[in-house]
Image (cartoon, rainbow, N blue to C red):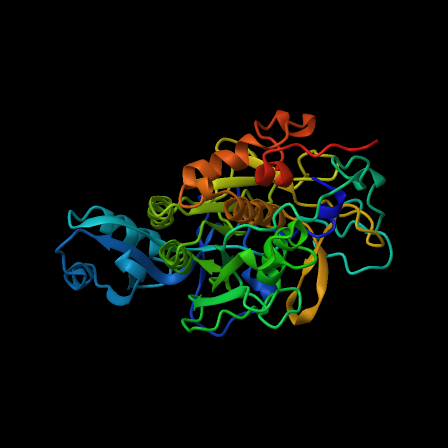
Length: 440
């Protein structure tokens, strides 16, 4: 990935866990949203769920109210496309109720309303680079000490002679942002480039970003100066259908399922999910399969706890799961990896906050910009590339399998990622089919 791209492609970290825990799930209720720190979960606490809520899909012709009454549950909201219905019961009984419903012959599947995370893993020593002195370790035995210079960049492939018009002249396409929303007033986005979809978290039609994460990931995809569409010259040829699924409690799978289905129906060529959690969701699995049937790729971040298990929904074989690499073309210390991983892309590994080395720069809420790191920033590079590639190549539009192959088959084999079974995204080659050569 070129240095010209590296200064402008990024997002914030995803706090996801490696595997299911036997510890009780942390239950988040419907009370006013807690501070962001309260919303974090870790392996000791178990995975967070929405209090009392179970998602259920009943078989055709079955009255879901009858099923609910038989279990002492009340009927809540119906999902988009009737993909599920929310049933409500006692807080803390989410798994018990889901298991009981699974045994009902009238039910196709049932599961808790899990909470995914778009926020930084609390184990990371840095996620935001505001400028000033070199980064210090924030915890552990090295707390207060400078981060080793080994985190700084020494290798940055294809750094010379970037052709900044290689994406120009294509057709109009739409990609999807499924995140915390977007700052629609940010000058980084061209007029008419952002399309307002639904806010599935607050259940309204205003997916404005209150966090910053979604503005950052969307800027990575299409920003006029920091995003792939802007840098490549594609500009307004790549628009973004914006949906909000995350708030301070996290990202309920009910909202995510709705957004995937809605993006697929809108006609996006690819959608970005910079979020994740440890448990595989049947609802997400169904939605991803539906998206694929509509020729829409689902591109998701692999997670940030450093474990050898890919987080979900990236874990789904129909999704494209993205590992985060650093500027040495090595796996970052935080990126999850393992079976089902598909591709790597620069996610940043912050060292100095006086230079762009290590972190990744993109737009942020309130009209600003931030240096951030995480698999959240790696995934949108792949999604933005998918948009530009589909814009330029008619054979990739309306053909998700061909677009997926184009992204994976044009990636670079780099030594630092070979042991993880993936190559590193090459945006230029994915769009043009040719290799950029350096004069040096």
